[in-house]
Image 1 (cartoon, rainbow, N blue to C red):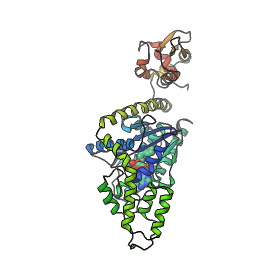
Image 2: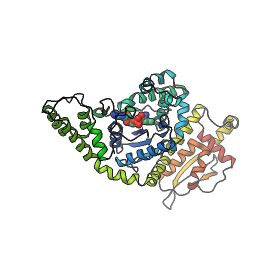
Image 3: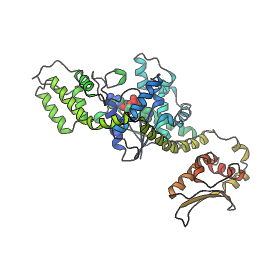
Length: 419
Ligand code: TYM
């Protein structure tokens, strides 16, 4: 199962983001092949201050790690380090009906709130579809407000498959943790940066206390029974607490707890949960270079999937070498296609592969590799990208002549699906 999700670096991570996406996504990181990323291309639709954006990216990377993301278990990267996202987004946009985007709630809400929309804001769901489809994701953990965007992604994938070939795109499913699908903010509306009603997860203690004191309540006096129904304070508490703690808190509401006391209880509960993560948060904030190294390593892993995917897609939509049409007479193509990869193990215990032509003459030879998987991966890349993969694979290969026509022709034939 491949799991993928992203967060926009456009302000401090708040409790809504944490329970809507971060916590459920991090629970899933041990259950499959997880890809989590910082959606900085998306943030450009709302943040037009380079310095601020850099700060948000840094903080969000730290948030992910402090909340428990394990970069050895999942692929953790920054979207803009993988330019295939924007290339795919363009290709998808060419089949995406305008009406599909015009119906998106999040776009309509922004317009209703008087935000003057850029093309990027309108096209936002297409970029999100690209993020998801590029990695052939099965499951997308998100809060309820993103459900429609995952549905749009499915619609776009269906359209692409109808247009360019069945099976090119996998259809993803949203995964929504119902109990925290919409976490309310200080004023009782959905917690959101755009409503200025958030509680940042790593707010320092004094700020946290002050924000909690500002949560909207009704005018019931101490001793008067209070309703948990529609109480933002109660719902936020519930997100952090166990079932038993929640039941006890509900009883306190029924017994007429004073609002001030209820707010103190919430503050203590949140602080208790966050305290262990704070130390790591502060250490990572002081060591941005460590974070940068992790993001780079993650981007390399992400590109190892994204690049061959785009190579296949480029072929399918017709963005391919002109040489294909002219050099592939039927006889030539058949001859070149007869070249094949051989995988084997040598006495030194290492794994090798080679490319040989129809008569068994050697065209390309690998060096010794640690595992058959490493050999398989290199072969897959050559089959997907042809000669385009040679530069990247050079460290794994015995010296070869990059201009050798039979080698180039064989790789070309192997990487070009028959028409
Ligand atoms: P963003 O950064 O706006 O929101 C990140 C995640 O937080 C969830 N969320 C909430 N959940 C519950 N209650 C709330 N009050 C609340 N507020 C926010 C959101 O549902 C989301 O899951 N478009 C995405 C980022 C993105 C993405 C993707 C996600 C870009 N590409 C590909 C998944 C897959 C977004 O708006 O993030």
